[in-house]
Structure formats: C-alpha cells, structure tokens
Image (tube, rainbow, N blue to C red; front, top):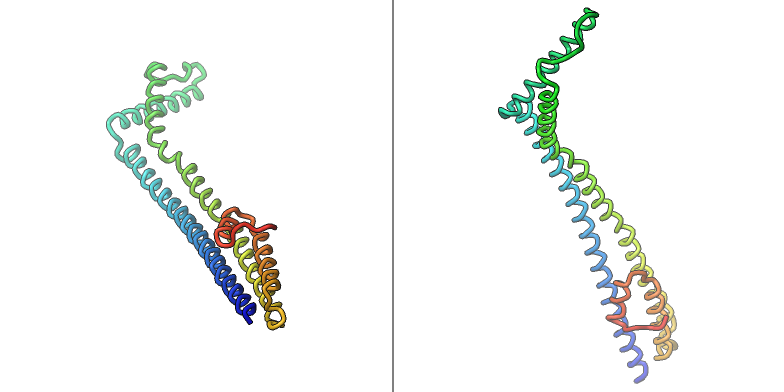
Length: 221
C-alpha cells in the first residue's frame, strides 16, 4: 500500500511538472506569434508612412521647383527655356537655309554649361528625398518577410508540444489500462523516462531544451 501511495505521488508530481513545461512552451509560442504580428504590422505601417512622406515630398518638389520656384531656380529654369527655344529656332533655320551658321545660342558655351549644372544640382537636391523611396520600401518589405519566416518555427514548436502531449497520453493509457498491476515505482519511472526522453528528442531549439532542463534537469538521451 505504501508503495502504491509513493508511486501515485511520484506520478502526480511528474504530471504537475509536465504541465508546467507545456504551459511554458505555449507561452513562448504565444509570445512568438505576438512578436511576429507586431513586426508585420510595424512593417505595413512603415510602408504606409514612407509612401505618404514621399507623396508630400513630391508635392513640395512640384510646388517649389515648378509652380512657385525660388528666385534662383526661376532664373535657371528661364535660362534653360531660353536656351531650348534658341536651339530649336536655329535648328529650323539650318534646315531651311543650307548656308546658315551652325546651331548656337546667345550665351557662351561655358555659361550655358554652368547654368545647366547648377539647375541639375538643385533638382538633384530635391529629388534626393524621392530616390530613397525604393530603399525604404525594400527595407520594410524585407522586415515583413523576415518576420513571417518565423511562422515555420512557430508551427514546428506547436508540433513539438502536440507530440509531447500525445506521448503523455500514450504513457498514461498504458498505466491506467492495468493500474493495479502497473502502478509500481519501477514501472511508472520507466514510463515517465520514456515520455521525457521522447519529449526532449523533439526539441531542436536550444531555448526549448533549456526550458526542459530547468524543470526536469539533464537526462540521458
């Protein structure tokens, strides 16, 4: 009778510890799911924010560069427009008059080149903000893909937990089928060891193994 009580107490203690292990596993899985969802939502929010900011930048560029440019930009744009008009006009003259001079402008070549360079610099400064759009979006997309890659790990850990519970079910069924005969210390210890060994072998992540060892200690597998 005393041995039966000791065996029962041992089995109850094991079930309590095993339940604690499963609870910790499920909490870890839940945290992984929450972290994944938060990362995906943050990535989506970043994409939305990036697109909105670049829309604002584009509107500002259109406003300050073309619709209401500052004084220097207006002068440069007017110079380029004048240059374009002169080139087109002279080109047409050359087409209709074979003796006309080569296409030229009223301004020296050096001045024309300097004006074009300065305008290009100003446009580059404005467009620089927009050129970052692809990089920003790519970074956000990669962060979402990276977060979703943990989905396989979550599924794997869920499978480990399910297999552990099935192992527990099999072991308990074996004992309860003939409890009076099998409720002996050596028999229960053998079943418990079998359950623990099977459970530990399922784990592939060190984090899982550490949680197991924190409760049951190190076992020979």
